[in-house]
Each structure stands twice: as structure tokens, then as C-alpha cells.
Image (cartoon, rainbow, N blue to C red):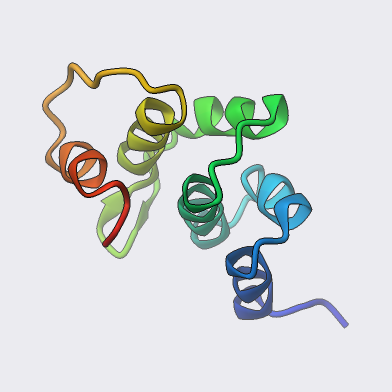
Length: 101
């Protein structure tokens, strides 16, 4: 049977990098946003993951009120050690807290 979304998320949080990378490309926004958070937590910088983050920076779907694009932009800045020049409040707070939310 197919794993429940929660099982997949648990696997990502346990540090399964393959799981994180494959779910950055999921059609399920809940899995995408958790893949981004886990990828930042584990400082993933594989080309596939970074590409997935780049794609997610234009994803306007929301999870619990947070646009995936806001979270992805923060991840790009943290993982690439780049300054953020925009004015998105969520992105700014995520960078400031280093995703400790």
C-alpha cells in the first residue's frame, strides 16, 4: 500500500535525503513544503535538490497559510548563502530564524 503522507514526512525528518529530494518535486504541497524545511535542516545542496527549490520559488500554493514560494526563497538564500532583497515577511522571518520555527 502507498505510504501515508505523514509516514513520508516522518522519513524526511529522520534525514532520508533521497526521500527529501524526491518529494521536493511532489504534486502534494504538504510534501513539498516539508521537503524544503528538511532540506534546509540537513543542509542539502545536491544539484537536484537546489533545482527543486528553484522550481518551488514560483509555487504559489499555500500550506497552513504559508506560500511555498516564500519558504523556497528563504531556503535558496540560506543554502546558497545569498542575501534576500525582497520584502516577503515570511521569507525574512525564516531566514532570520534559520528555519527554527
